[in-house]
Length: 132
Image (cartoon, rainbow, N blue to C red; front, side, top):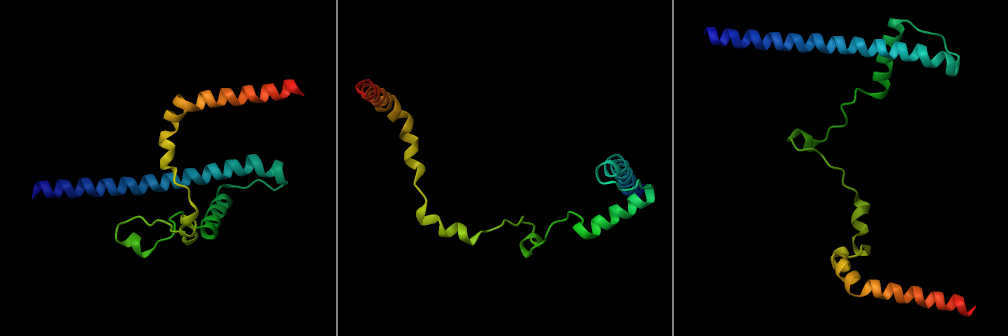
């Protein structure tokens, strides 16, 4: 019984500490917003400086307009899987794709024939320039 009590008290303390930490981080973010506004906006756009409570209002308004960063949820995310975007147009390109599996032989080709062929090509073009 005593172990359960200690467990629940510890858990309650952790939850309380996380709530307090979250509130402090929110208030700190609001303070940083106020300082950034007062540093940048008056010089850049001629806007007036703001106080802490107006900065809080701007922060809340921005969160309402732009969202809270949770992202969209689909039915697949309820099952615990992360959703992936599937592009239908991607499958249309499948027949036009090249087979790049042949490129694994490129290094061997270059060692055996490519370097010699390139030197012959350069010599051929140098001889053309000399003829002109």
